[in-house]
Image (cartoon, rainbow over all chains, first blue to last red; front, side, top):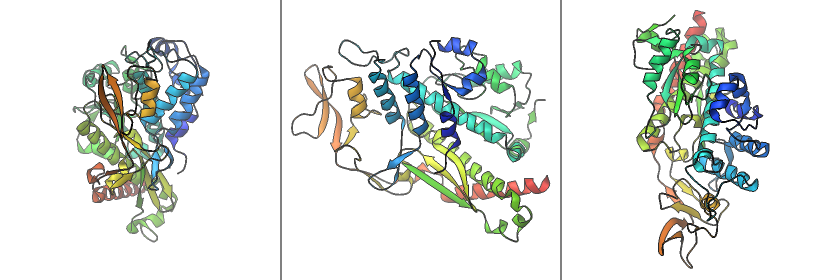
Amino acid sequence: MPEDIQKQSILDKEVFPTGLRSMEIREFWSDELKEKALFSARTTSKAYLDRVKEVLADYQTTLGETSAGEPMTQGLQRTRMLMLEKLDELGLVERDENGDVIQGKMTNLGSSMRLNLVIKTNTELANSMRMKMVAQDPLQKILNPYFELVRNETRKNPRNWWDRWLTCAEAVGWKGVVKGTTRMIARCDSPIWSELGHRFDDCIGTDMPPFSFGSGMGWETVSAAEVKDMGLEVGE
Amino acid sequence: MGLNLQVSLPASLKGEGKLGKIESRKESILLAGGQALQKLLRNWMRELNSSRSKHGSNHFTPSGIHDPVIDGNNVSVGIFIPGINRALHDVIIRPVEANALAIPMHADAYGTSPREYNNNHPKGSPDALFRPKGKDYLAKNDNGSLVVMYLLRKSVTQRQDRTLLPPAEEMSETALKAMHGAVEAILST
C-alpha cells in the first residue's frame, strides 16, 4: 500500500511538548504552528509525544494479517492501549489508592477520555489537512470547489452547529458561503472556515474540522454542478 | 481489517476514444472517479455511524476511508475499518497473539481489551480481572459477587453483512459518472 497522505501528514509533524492549557494554545500559538506541531495540552514529555506520533501514524492502517490472511487494521482500542503503556512507563498516569487509572478527568493523561480525544483530534485534523491539500488541485478547483460541514460522528449532546454557522457567515459577510439552504456549504477558500475554528470558547484555533474538541464534525466535498443544480447563490 | 475497492477506466474512454485526445490527463480522470467513490463511502460510513451507535463510539467513521491510489488504468480506494471484510463474506476470527479471543460481556469491558482493562485496573485493584479455575471467562469481584467481564473463545464467526458497503452497482456508477464528468470538464477548459 503506497504511503497515505494522512499518515504522512502525521509523520511530518514536529513533536512539541508544552505546559500550556488548550485555551492558551489557541490564544498564543499561530495556526501554522498548530498545523505543524504534534502536541497535547499540558503535555511536557517529549518521549510520550514521540510515541503518540508513532502510534497515530499507524492508526487505521494495516498492521499485518489476521490468521485468515486478511489485512488487520490498528483500531482505536489498540492505539489507546499503546499510549497508556508508554505513559505508565514514564510514570505519567494518575491512579487512585487501588491502582486504578482515574477516569473521567481530562487532565489525567492516562484517562480513556483524554486518550480518545488526543487520537480523534489528531486524526481528524490530519484527515481535514489531506482534504484541504486535495482541494488545491486545479481540476478539483473546477469540479469540487466547495466543502460542506457534516456530522461524522453522533454525539449524545451535540453542539448547535447551525447556529454557529449562521453567526460565522454573518461575521464574514457571507463571503464564499452558499445561501438559501440549510446545508452548511461554502467555498473551500471561504473565511467562514477560519471563523468557525476561532470564534467560540471551545475552538481548537484552526481553519479546518473538527474545529472544536470532540465535535464529531468533518468536511465533505461538494461539486460545482451540485450547487448549480440546486440553483443556489454564493456570497461574493 | 482492511479492504481495497478498485475501479477501472471505462472502455469508452480508453485507446482511440475520448481519452486519446487527453491522454496526459488520464490520472486526473481516474482520480476524479476515485474521489467520487471515496465520497460515497464516507457518506455511507456517516450513515452507519449515526444509525448503529448511540454514543458515536463505533468504528464506522469517514476517516477510515483512505485516498484513491492510481495504478495504470485503475484507481483503488482503501477502507481501513475493523470488520469491514464482513461486507463481502463471513469472517472467522481467531486469536493472532493471544491464546483466546475475549468477547466483552459487560458495559465496562466494551471497546476495551483485557490487556487495556488490566492496565486500567492492575492486580490488587478491587476491579482487577481474574479467571476462575477451569472456566472460560474473565471476571471481576463486585462485593462478593462474580461479574463476568469477558468470554474466552478459540474462534468467533461473524456473519456477512452486505449493508456495510453501498451496492456494487452504485459504487461503480458513481465512479464512472465522475470520470465522465472530469473528461467533460477537461474538454471544456
